[in-house]
Length: 159
Image (cartoon, one colour):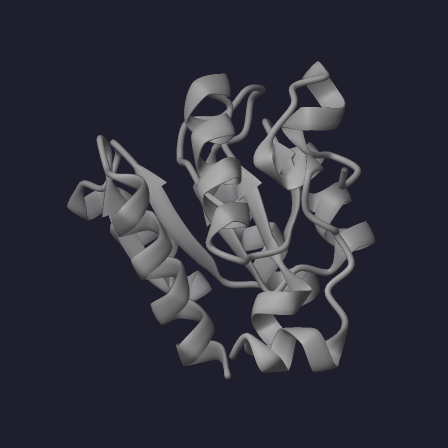
């Protein structure tokens, strides 16, 4: 299990428990994965069920989920440690700061860009996020297939 994953935090078994976490370069290349896909995805979502579904779906699709954060502060700390390729970001988070503020910190400090997956994608919110070069927006409720598709598209744009 990856530190910061829901499996660690809540002792939840997932399909990732049956698959090896460490995907070597030759094995990953054999599956057609890009280097950014190997580096991973950080999920920032304070709704446990949505975070759990997203983590499981992304792992099943072959992504390395580096962790699940529920607040802006936790997202920055996890990004500092895990150095993911991209972040899936909700707007409403636990704590005083929102996802746009977290995205700003991640962009300024690490050059990380976000896929925003949120119910709050109104024009003023999008305008606040624009300086941090979002990789895409996904409106809640969304399907796990649409999340995976948008993350794959984002990884391609980063390559």
